[in-house]
Amino acid sequence: MTSLPFTRLAQARWISARLSLIALLSFACGQSGPPDAPQATGGTTGTGSGAGTGSGSGAQSGGNGGNAGSGGTTTLPPGVEGPGPLVPGDRLTGVNWFGFETGNLSPHGLWARDYRSMLKQIKDLGFNSVRLPWCNDMLKGSPTGVQINEYGIDPYTKETGLNLDLEGLTSLEIMDKILAECRRIGLRVILDNHSRAHDGYMNETLWYHGDYTEAQWISDWEFVIDRYRDNPAVVAADLKNEPHGNMTTGMKPPATWGYDQSGYEHTDWRKAAVACGRAILAKNPRIILIIEGVESYKESGYWWGGNLAGVKDHPITAAEIPAGRLWYSAHEYGPEVFNQPWFSAADFPDNLPAIWNSKFWFVRQNDMAPLFFGEFGIKEASAADPSSVAHQWLATFMAYAGKKSHWTYWAMNPNSGDTEGILQSDWLTVNPAKMAMIQPYLAPQFAGEP
Image 1 (cartoon, rainbow, N blue to C red):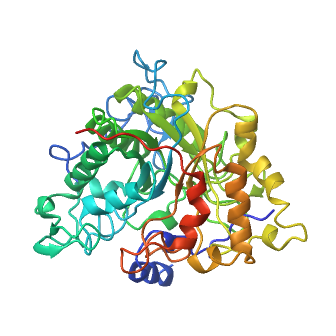
Image 2 (image 1 turned 45 degrees about the vertical axis):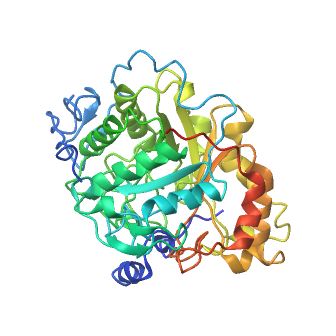
């Protein structure tokens, strides 16, 4: 199998057409904002003091961005072995609503809709959760693209007044409002750290880059988790979206699993995820940690973040992350994102289960941890055409995994370049063929809080 080439148009999934074009051509505030992470002492070989208050002495910030110590040294608090945020049998089946990770630093569509109306429509469609991509820039940023209009009429609820309580708020304060509304109506939330810089996803193979260190990444996560620890709607942290890169034609440095790539400094995503995860659990022992795969393992590639093959050789142990707090995650896409060779194989789609078993499904088969599919999607024209390759791929995938895993469809937004959205370009009308393909696999919803 070949790995996904650099020319993939994945960035168009999560930014507007205008921002996508710019990117392809050029190939926040706590109570007052998140703290800057203290810099570890001792350089790349020392035993620095780590990030914030929770990452422990195993975190180093010297060299090219910092490296997590083996297994992390954060002491986990009481309760981390106890009940989590979901009861046995609960299954998350949701949708992505993106925008906090783009230059808008706010969810897209608020130029046309009230945020409460958007969340209500998500709930009304039968979803029980929402994955919210965010970037670290938004923690100290100010939003654009939000319509504040006391006379505006929301096209879905027909109520007058658009986003009036968002006026003058920072991006982080808008997230506060959205998460509070999710709690009120019973939507569970997965916070997805999509990129460090806004619109930076394509160029960030790792969880640190340039002057933005691993220590700061961990510190930012600690800040976010601590801020929302008393909101039971926030159930999971997707630590880094789509670690990627490979040693052939792909981007460098590559994210690796279980080892540091020779010729580069700190590329072991497994090690970094464990250190960050333990720091997060020290802030909220009930949160679920979602850890994605990489692109390439042992020279065998797959979708960005979708390759969990390294878990076979280097699983995260219960001593590192308690079993009840760990979900592995993969992203799965069809030929509309990139026409991978398996889509034109003579035995397609019967060849797909063997591929999935080798890349991620073995995790469930061997009862290693729950699986979460944070992204998958299809265009409406393909969803409406059962003879299309994309339709056959998604139908096979949903039949295989749709009722046996947690998932969030990509995306609610219509401005996703290579999958489009649940909504049409009016930010109101639902694409019926897409919903018909995923609706049979929706899990029961959760009750809201008054």
